Length: 526
Image (tube, rainbow, N blue to C red; front, side, top):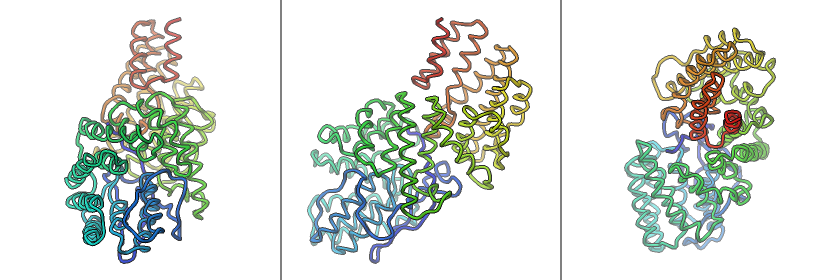
């Protein structure tokens, strides 16, 4: 199943193209919606229209008499496939301005302004996009190829009851699939079709898997012909992750960052493969590079620190994914470098969704694992409930490292999640708080030489961690290591070597190649 990406960015308006105005992206759901008032809108559009290199491949010849319009159209496709959303819209708007008679330029503006894998569109936002698609169809009647008219007709279907996971999106995907069948050698059509399948309606993990399996053959054909096609690699990483076969994308993931060195999202994307094949350090390193690109972009755009970079597209996602890889890999330097700013940013927050607090908790996990206990114990308590639970957990881990079982118990008892299960975010916050409390209960029991009690606590925490509702809600997972490994260690301490091995192997099945669990298995076999 696809894990919900955490794309947490400031909402800004979109640029206008002549009389055409595209609406800014809107969140697809409350679960994906906001972190510190952010959405998925891309703030990285230049103030004056310009071609932005370094975002990978994309684009195709269109009917226009203006070479500059073709250039901005191609760049708009590259930017859109790299999830540089607002910059893509700006490029397409400039293509329309340069050639108002260009049907495909207007198609490009309507398409880039529409839904993506990560966010949807409201009915109100769809209305101007539908009007653009209809106007593009009119323009294409006079001058346009059959292929262009078919692309425009497919987009018209999307904007009738569409917008992300709605009937119009399925209609668009089916129309694009017919085009892909009719043009089997057309890489651009294949990629657009695969992208469309990945955002069609899905209510269950099997639905997501089915959509991914429809996308993968299209992308594999493209990659067989053009293994350096960055849009195909991008969506193949997504599709293979959703389908549960991430290793298939590994050879392509290895080359993506170098092919799109300015695209922070594409530099980040290999980590979606690396994490799930057990290459945790590579996942961390990819996101360190993506974060650096974000910082450079913020500086170039004149966005002042410290808040500027946090408003850039996908920056928080890059930070938390880098944390996920570093925590698994045991990379203290990277985990602390990424985690400390996240904690500092969360300390004074008065308002944030429970879901976004679950994500920000990873900063506290980094300090819990790697920071000096004195540093952790000096942190002020955050105001928000899930973050407060993570703070108590970090304090408990710091006290456990000092051998203070009584102090660990105090912190465990103080952990309380958000009140009420009014939405999925609150439910995840409650589950995270439960895991944190039971892990600390287990730590205290181990310090007091009560391994059987510790095993009970760790088992309860592991069962919640591994439940579908919790383990699939964030990407990377909200809890930073397999608690079942702690269960195995407790069983080993109780002299139950065979049971310990069984649980360690289960931990590795849940989190492949986890270094701490692999080290524990060696101890079990000694």
